[in-house]
Image (cartoon, rainbow, N blue to C red; front, side, top):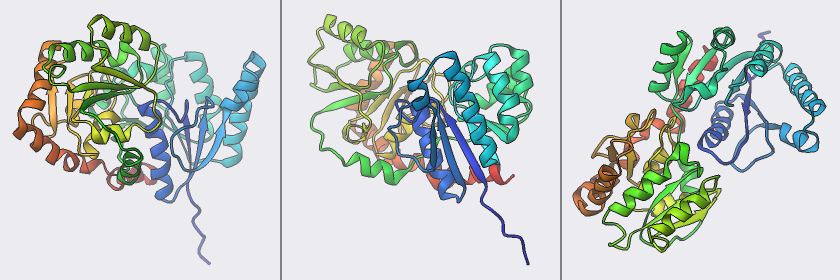
Length: 365
């Protein structure tokens, strides 16, 4: 009698399932792996659950909220380890940022050694994903089953800095059905361009966006800038907008779990980050047939945007050039319609089905 093959079991470890693009991508990965037929579990460090996901959830954040003393942290460690030991996972896919040397050494040697670890690197600032002690980092990650960067630029830099040979690229996917359903949830009015994401100016550089918008012709044309998100620099940016006398033109919409009705309605979306990974802002916009104007920041945009075909890709940290790109996207109707027409087709290779094949190769390899 033939032996029945059991489902492979995969654990996704993430800080949360809320707020950022990395967390949204992790939630989407749980759906992708479930659809491939794997048994999926998710462990979150924080009790923040907003995005759609599939699988069994171990929410360590609930325990953290009850007891975050030293004893509470030790208890969570053993709960986590016991959970992994009980379920005998084939793979653990770690999506967290990982900079604390001692903590990562302990997790690698006393928790993840029970399964095959796959370490995700979801930012062009790769040092967020490796312990500061380079020797320990090399010791930990050379034993990994794989290190997955979400862009080719990330893969190249990891190989250059750490000389690992087990590094591959798998792009963030798009779930078209979820996007389309969520984009129709509200009827949005207005004539606007859009930026959305965490309000952290050191990373997202909304100051550049606001300065470029102020220099552009858009305010005079009554085309507003909507900014969706929350974060530590919100009040500072509001004050800057007030000083520029643009409070009626630049509107802060706060945090929205579902920004996609705005993305669908926007004339174009913008991205002005200092660094990214493989930015969901761009691929989500293109999937909803909304062109993009983005800076060529470290990691991501140059692997998505074809200049003049599905959007405009411009030099970073130059408000004059960014303002010119904004003007061009509004004033050059032929360019705009061409970018809008090509938007969806340009990210066809990022469909859930296509990216699923890359993950299947890793897990079945």
